[in-house]
Image (tube, rainbow over all chains, first blue to last red; front, top):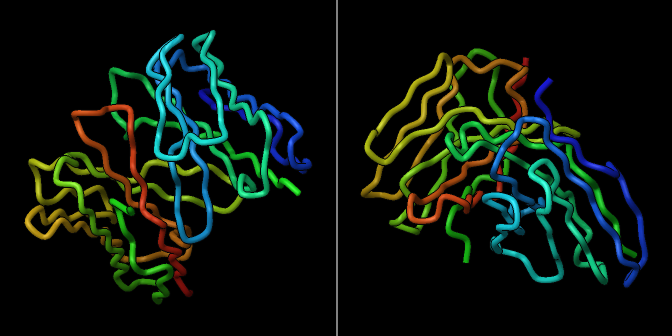
Length: 114
Length: 113
């Protein structure tokens, strides 16, 4: 089954404690992306990657890091989380031969930073 | 600066009637527009899209209209069904940057039986 998986699904942490949210896809997609969803702001793109070792900033990259060492994985790293990073996070992937019509989203990770 | 705006946070319609969700954009470089649907505790799923070379695209009960001069698009759902109750996001991208996708704030649609 084609899918994007994220772990963990829920996470409560404290300010300053480094964390990583993993994202993996099994569709051999070149493109992967991270978004955050906040009330009244919709979905905002954090980072995206067009292929292995190629990453670029989205609209809200501050406070986040990503890496793309393998095609299937695109972890989101919060080196020093702060309460304003409390949000619902989505990973997504698609083939570069297609368009955003064919973008698949993961189920989401709800992060709370206290 | 919100480049894609959905000014109605919520919409309630009766089953069988038409639902119209609206979206405005400011960036004239956008040339591809999409609607995603999101249920609680799930990721968004693609619903329908339209290229800037068209003014209408239809897929079953769903139709998207694009008015480039007004920088406005709308999603029509006819007839609306209770299973359509979800959050709908409008999104836009530009061929000049195929990696970026800009979303609106979302509209929560409730279809009452």
